[in-house]
Image (cartoon, rainbow, N blue to C red):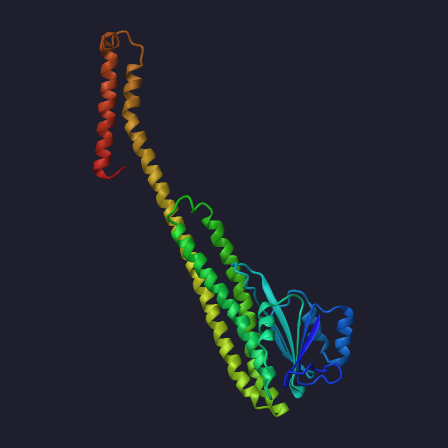
Length: 317
């Protein structure tokens, strides 16, 4: 699917005959659509190959034909997972033309498209900034969801019925954080490289708006840096949760072992007495006494209750 909008007016752009001052958005192009685009725009072969490669990480290159940015972010689908969105941006500053290519739907790009308003100059820089800014916001949405999940994990540590799968969940979120950190780091380096080259692009094309774009891009770099640091903090929290959970489980095991030891200690003298009275000697007065059985039970009960009271008093049970 190919759609286009004029950068300077609300009229329907004739971008196929005059590919200037337009924004062309391409979604999952067919071979025929791709061939048609090549006849209108000059694409660097390496850049086009990267744009059409599934799962490519963020990167920026300034080619002779155009500036090229692959921007890969997380998908804010209401779940804390590693689904990603990717947009490839081809910028032709000498003709005020922008081409965005994506292989799948990208939510924030459609939002920018719906709110697009043409102006007299510098619109493509603003579109680029809006796209990158909203993509960075998706990382922030992920970190907010992740914080809520880590808070829930912290609360479940002390609830035995909820802590059974805690270790599995912690490692699941640590894996998500590792993936997100790589995505944020790649996006940050790409945008930072774009910001460094934007002044060069402005000098070559006599544009002053690229200086403003450079400031905006540095703001996005700062936003991505804060996101990266937030992910590091979440990773440390999960590590702490894992350590505390191991401590809690160890304490629970110690309590169980203390209880079992106490019970074994109480039954130890009872077992001894039962073993003594169970010996088949003829000269054992208690064996032939009428109340011997009752006496043995009284001794067992008094000894067991006495040891139990003593252990409870000392705090051993």
